[in-house]
Amino acid sequence: MKRLAVFLSFVVALLLFSTSAVYANTVWQIGGDEETTIEEKVFTDDEALINHLARVGFAYNDIDEYFYRDTKDWQTYNSLTEKFPILVHNNNFAIFSINTLLVDSNNETNILRNYSGPVKLEFTAYGLYFKNSGDKVGDYTTSYLFSNPNATGFSKDILTKFLSFDGLILGIGIFVLGVLIITVVYYRMISRVDKLIVEEYSIENYLNKQAEAEVRAKEANSEAEVKADVSANEMGIDNADNNMVADALVNEKDDGVEG
Image (tube, rainbow, N blue to C red; front, side):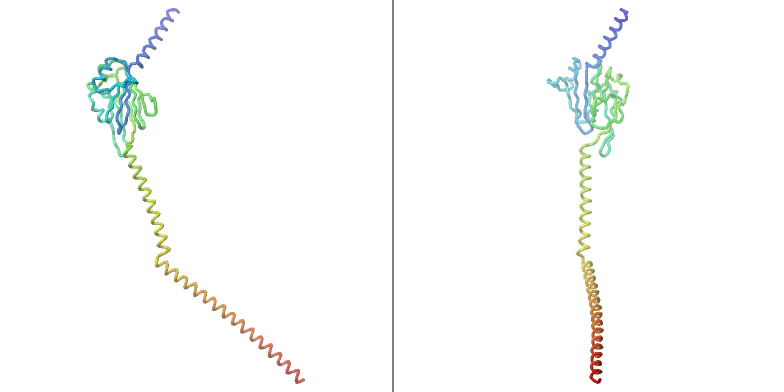
């Protein structure tokens, strides 16, 4: 039992030491996308690596204690003579690009070629990841832990693929689309108003209204004439009746006188 306890203690100590060794040496952060500056931050306590970073152009932040370097874009980064052993290939389309993060097997440009400690790469790209061999540690950040950062220490050639959008072209496209929509709506409204004006105030419409007014006037006159004829006829009948009554009264009077 005593030997087992000693053995277990040794295993636990070994695991703790290995874990601290893996995670305590160097963290290399790289961030950016196709259209933005590539930013690098290096957190390390390795003296040889610190001296090498200073020689190849990295600046040092005294407050947060890390080395940093900015590169124009991925194309420029890929052509650096001293860089983290990765490449980013871009397949550009109209407003977006498909980007592939690859392992760079060229050991001559590997800034870590003489470094034997473990390195944790934290890669940040503002886009949509659709193939990833690392561990997601944020919405846009993936981490990769390498026990040996030289070219033979990478087990996979493709680290990740992601889709990124060209912000400038996308913004211009949205603006142009908005202008087109507004223009189409405006001209449709103008066309509708113009059609209403033509229908309301055109000479043809005016003549049609005049003709309709004349027809209505003639119809009104015809109705008035019909009513007048009816009234005249009714008055003629009444006069005839009155004459008949008068004649009857006269005849009765004459009969009375004769009697």
